Image (cartoon, rainbow, N blue to C red; front, side, top):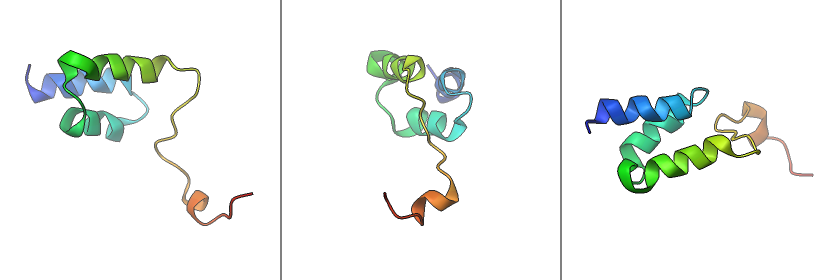
Length: 63
């Protein structure tokens, strides 16, 4: 499978987070062994993934 196909598949899993899809395609686990299963599990989880935190989240003190 070529890189573009893998990237396209990950983009289908992470439509709202294209940077995460690129990271999975370039640096993630092997897509055929665990990568797609991991991406599916992350997509299907009840807790949303916040891959683009707000700029203020780094300057606000923790409460």
